[in-house]
Length: 206
Image (cartoon, rainbow, N blue to C red; front, side):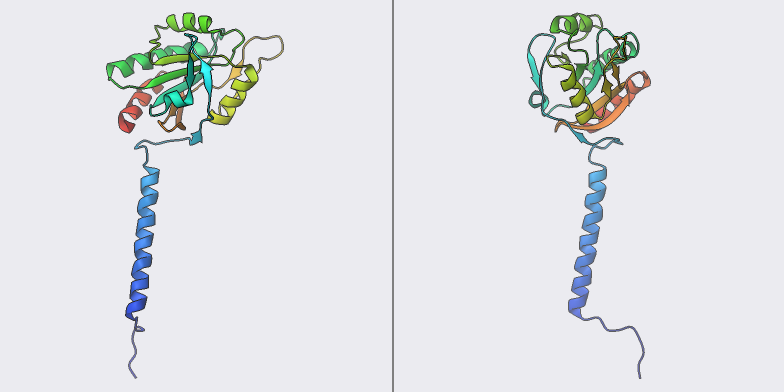
């Protein structure tokens, strides 16, 4: 009697080969998905549709930003603490993007819309030498709307001021948004080192 490995017919070989091909294809697709943006990401959030008012009393919507990379943050002009370094860093980012000839939109959402009218936002932006052709300051909604929008689309906390205070509570992150309207990464908005990281990431994804 002859002992050895069991015989595998041609049909079984074909089935095993097809399974192997499918497995390899799955692995390749998985790796491609992980490297979709060519940078290390830490978020994946779809942004809710919006249409808000700019510092020039014009409208800016999610549809207007479609096809562009953009960086967003949430600030208010009456802020006496974290918004100061955040807006300074955003202004620095604007300058460095211009130096590198990187076409990216910047969007700052006001979380104090009662105080931050378009005129107030324009004066605020001018104080940081904002180039309004690519840096928009948005208002034109009520507090509950921007609170919900910030939390739902960006996972960014926004809360009313404590009793007896006028300082709105909010997160201090910058957000990188893809041309498809997906938040793919956040950075510290108060850390000046984030500016260079954002520029390097944008070089990789564009």
